[in-house]
Amino acid sequence: MFDVLVCDDEIADVRQVCALLREFSDRSGIDLSVTSETSAQSVCAQDRAFDIAILDIEMPDMDGLRLAEYLMQKNANVTIIILTAHMKYLDSAMRINVFRYFSKPLDPERFFRGMTEAVEKCRLSGKTILIEADKRVLRLRTSEILYIETQKGGSLIATRSARYNTKKRTQEWEQEIALPNVFVYSHRSFLVNLQNVIGVGKDSITFQTDDGEQSFPVVSQRYYQRFRKAFFAFVEAEV
Image 1 (spheres, rainbow, N blue to C red):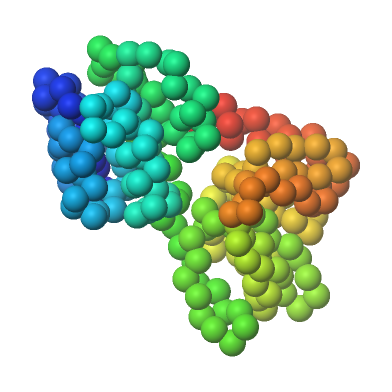
Image 2: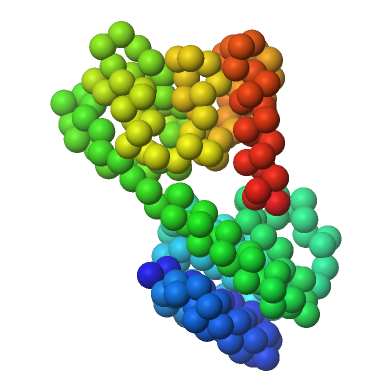
């Protein structure tokens, strides 16, 4: 079950999106719990987290981008979809990592494709593993991982905000995570999560971390072309 928010100040647009979501659920067999609102302030008053938020970008009380930022405080992995008749907000939206734009009037087939991809993104973001590190057992979202580095006697898991030494080998983590098109080797000792990669060079890979963009020398010449190809295939699948 995925919690979906629809917020648009035009009631006719809300009804259309909700009808499309019902049809999408019937077609795909994916259960959706849909909350619909015509006011961003009404959403904020609920103090809830959502998996997917479909937001009109132009609303009188609070625009869709500001509402998106609020929702990301409740769930950093919320998938944001923007409804708009204008693309003038593109630069601002890029900074908050908007997943898709749906132009008004809505194209149903494009909407269904976008929702299929949004649900898959939610599944990736929601996947977790248990790690034993520093005498603690932690639940870690795979979407938080930057890379896993092979080390003597185990491996190091580097995330967006921390580093964890574990006794499992990199190959064991690879099998447990089981996302072969997302976690790809950039070096025989580094298994990289493409979800957090924003740039690839011959000597380093740039990641998005909680402290901003950071580059690490985790790529080898032998693996460079193969990894670069996998990175472009991953990005093109998101567009």
